[in-house]
Length: 270
Image (cartoon, rainbow, N blue to C red):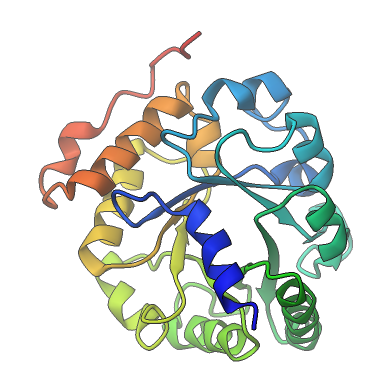
């Protein structure tokens, strides 16, 4: 019954010209503490341009301090843990769907790090959040990570976790891209047709690697990117997001995206 509301709200995270999501998660402070690029609200507001960024993911407190997400989609992250905790892969609920609604959120997100120890906790968490969010007509983005002993080596494990989340009703998925980007079609087979799959950027890397990921998103027809540190930790985050937007809109051939890469020595725009 709320499917139309969820689709309308999810569309706020999608660039109309390219049909791709360009979302920047800025929820890292809870887990990792102060980070370069997220130390001050002003640092984020400097690059938070709705012409290039379709949405952000933030915890409720930082979202309030930003005054919402001006002109782009706002997604409130509902769970978390400290990386110095006893079991950082067990993400606990730290706010509610109702609180996200009061903040004016367009969607909510949760992170589930799957291993043998966390699987039961994660399934219960996903099921409860989906039921609560859908009652308000809010889409749910599930960040799904494989933390088992074969993490990154067994594509079928991640496919299983993704399928479990789909079975429980999530509206979109964020996952780590496979090391071999040519394996993306196998990873998203049977899912991308009905549930957008967005790819994470991971730790700060060369910008060319980020553009290669974006080119693979175009090539394989997936939902977009949800990239944090590879945006806000760059000298010029807005410039990086603008290049990604232009790449998505123009559909630059695989060999031409290299021309878009810029040296990381740029200075921030005032």
